[in-house]
Length: 120
Length: 107
Image (cartoon, rainbow over all chains, first blue to last red; front, side, top):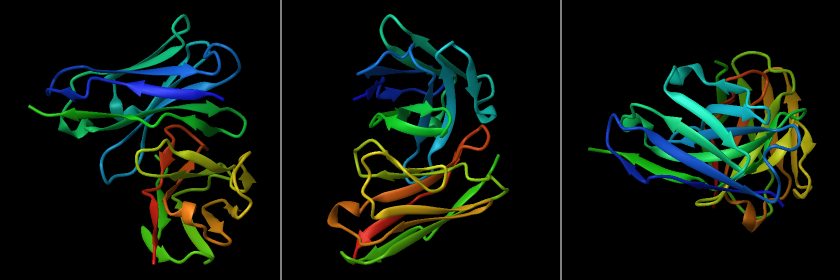
């Protein structure tokens, strides 16, 4: 059974860089044909797709994040990372990682998320 | 971006009721529509993929239908563990987009 667990800083100040990590167990992130995806959920709002990384390192990002976002993977640690620069209060959200299964193009495994608050 | 609109945003129902939630896309997405369930503090759970396919391990009382721009999720006989928030997601193009969610509450 694949399990995903996110970890992050909890609290950030405006203009800082958000770094969140997703640790995967029950399978290797570099095997199979999967995308590893980051999604966030501001309180009371809809889920927002941030971007994804394929097992070969190819990435797709949501244009709404412009050049602020970087997703990477570390096969040796079996982790996926998200970096978001120049954060503001609008980046306050629960950040989830998920596995995207091509073909059905569905998110079949999710982590429960990590809360990030941006406040001065 | 494709806009996904769910209705209702919340509903009250009783155990045993049949419940239907709708999701509309701002343009045709064929059958690239998924449904998820989320409970507070828990990871979202995939219920239905490509509009009508039941994810492995999901109870058969859940079903999905639709194509193009109009989709539905139905629960044939609501069980106590089904009180949760449900949301749809299009996987037709990136960026993927989600509905705002439907909260199913106990009447």
